[in-house]
Image (cartoon, rainbow, N blue to C red):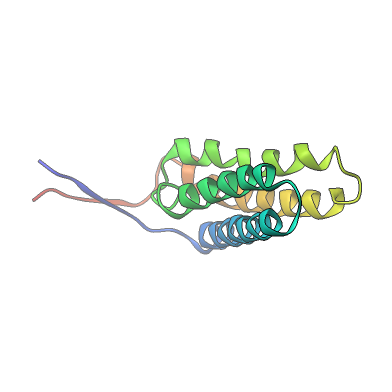
Length: 124
């Protein structure tokens, strides 16, 4: 028996998810470019892989409203804010992107934790 679950998202959820997708995508491109330009390719390869993983999680399970994906996505703003504390020159940029990610997560929170969502089940 298979079950198909369709969840209708409101504008707040869609806006928050788009914000998170754009932030994770741009940070992936940023770190991939820095990997090619700067002298520490392994460090930026790790950051690019981290952001790419966050992008995949936001694109697939986050869109399905899987609760674990919402909690796991908090690693994106945390992972951007912690390294920024070591470099005061880059801190404003990373803190700004981190704050935008927190905003995106807070906009989507209601869809993950409200019990009476409209869910349609179809069993073939």
